[in-house]
Image (cartoon, rainbow over all chains, first blue to last red; front, top):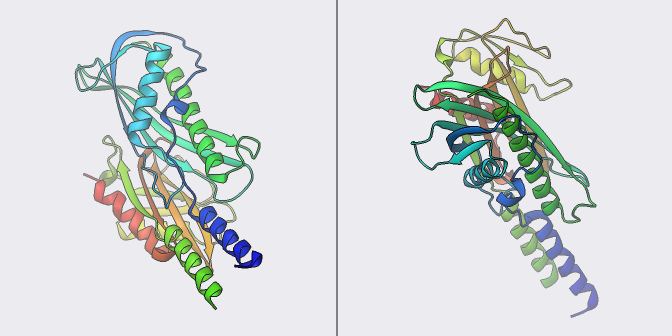
Length: 178
Length: 142
């Protein structure tokens, strides 16, 4: 086989990989909030529900899976101690429902900025009253310097936007008087 | 000839991987009462030429709402409707993804949201995309 043929097939293979990508879901650990200004730590338990996310398929770009967002929020709560404990199920003092409303991702570019919007609703379990109802917008940018591969760059931007959203959400929660 | 055939096969493989992505979701806040609403305003994205705002407004009118459109965000209506349209090129331009959100006018809180994504091979026209997203949102209304 001539060198030209090999080169042509290699280029085609690269195009295939470039087009199809190897999109990976946003990593749970990368979404855990680390820099949160906590106003108050609540001596109460909370359960977390998430929605609006999507699994990442081979034919899609990076998404945030509901289970990963839930795990990231729970770990962030434990880490920051905004609530005393996180409980699975319905026996917690408060129920936190976080739902992704929008995840705007670019298609092309060297710098990827991802915008995320999520609703944060906190319900008191004893009387089902809505204690907090906020929609939180966040964004994050990943540059070519962060990752040369576009699929990785996009995933980093998605994770960054989710992390900022969680940080803002926890700040709002910590400002409440429960 | 063999080389052309192998390149064509790879190209078709690439298209098959990227062209048939599909997603259609909708969610309505349990506290939202869309049925009792009468007036809505669709917030047009400035310089958006595909007239997605008009398509959304027409769909809402068919559902019995009184609808206005414009780039401003009035607070005197029962709900404002925002949208995000993402376009892609594959031989021709097509609407890859559409997200429509119905919001509380004073706080901007999302009351309902719907999202549809169709890759090149399953592409839909803008009116069909709007119909699908709005249909999915109102299917969730209790």
